[in-house]
Length: 298
Image (cartoon, rainbow, N blue to C red; front, top):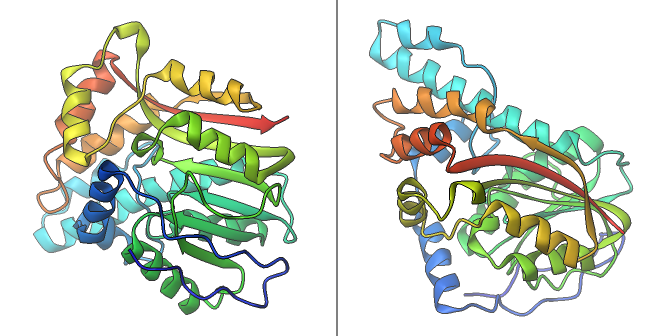
């Protein structure tokens, strides 16, 4: 792993250089996975408007896209509809970070190719720092920010989200969008609490297994294997937040709102990856949930 990009001297409060991400063998595998990843369901959707999201979608689907008789046009319409749903999810999360001002700074933990940080900046005008363990993702996201001419406000760092080197208490809001399953929750929320000022807001959108179902289901195990991750039980989030001065103020079950995304994606002959049925079955049998949790730092 290489060192981070040169720090921008024009930032209002400069970031001290952090060490190269500390990695366990598992973290190295995760970095390798995302450095090699070129999945069309991530890349083709992002090309529509240069907003590259690494998460799933929510909301009602326009199933008329499946009635398009021309195969090429049908693919274009399905791609656009999936992107609309994933962008709606990003906007939903960003809407729970308020109130924010252009003077505020926000932290995107596990930022992927950077779409979430851009959404937050466009909504609030705020400064954003994204962190990813993938050097390839950080380089890609910074290039996208430069193309948008927002590189002075939105910056991405090749760092470990558990040990960012970013300044203590400097952030008004922070979030993880479908990236918590790659890390230990106690360490993650300790870092969120360190970075946030008192009263700052932390929001996470997560896929978690439902403790009331019992242990992780077969479908959850297949999802873990597919993404080289370790999905946590629902209760673990609330315990880890409580131990790190993060008090939930809003919890929303998005499972029903997410199911249609998977129903549509299964119907795409170019974007489906083979994991769609595991999500659909787990959502329906109750063993897997898709949640939004918003907490304040006390």
